[in-house]
Image: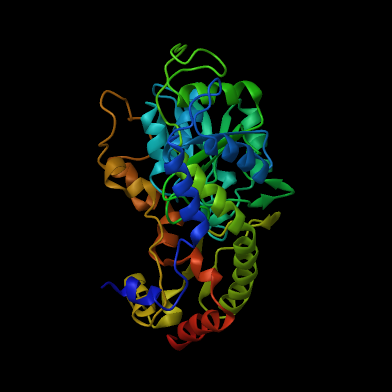
Length: 401
């Protein structure tokens, strides 16, 4: 058994489920309607209901449900006309899917360094990355922390760029009075097993643009058009439809989300105040203007010299050995083998990218490289724990000094 598994025994499990999810799945199986069908002829009803409820949940006009969070990014890129060797600016501090979805459209991701306090895309660095090939920006709301979307949209509008918000961590995060995902042309979400709203897998795209919504649906459902004959395929599309099983579970998980969301934010603030009071610990700072965070992960940065020169790996092991589950933060994209070695789509010219070979040197991405070397994150379910367990975390970290 790993350290992490032992540690998890002392804190809440994830996912949280009960007989309601089991009943919902049983009902789908017994119905014999195991897929959603089309807008013209419904088979199951869970996907259609989920799309309507999730759009409302995120304050958007439209929601298109898909099979996972990765293709949720890919589809709006295609719908917005992103293609062969176009450039798309992406945060360097994120899961690989934020960039691999760009590669899947035959476009080229360009990596943007982060703010050392908020840990999300540094909007001040975006304009320097724009070239005549740049067509879009993918801001990633890491840990539910919003990118400075008002300023980013000013830059995008000035340069005629499309914006797709990666909200995989940011369910019901609110920035300056607006749910994230509604600032850009589209917002994308993941419901993978570890997410704060989960069905094991699943994804969704939200938008307030009627025409874009229809095109996203068409691409995600084999080139079909809404309310047209099911064997008519009008443009290139593929099958990214969400299953009835996923939607049924998500509808039940959405009922549990409000209480969990409230508790996460309450405990996140409590733990932040306690940890930030320790000399040498800095919790991810909410972006100014943030009113609510999704808190999918809870990252903090430590100063090794304040802890006797401890390394990241040593810190990680000490926490897990003493009953505190932790996760590694995402390795910066520029240093991943697939980008460093340019082992990607064949026949695509990546020579103008700001990564690959020597360009992937950490010195070219100084902030994210430094932050990654001394950051650790707690899983979000830790924020569902009781105050005494949160105090235990704080006291143990103090003991390491």
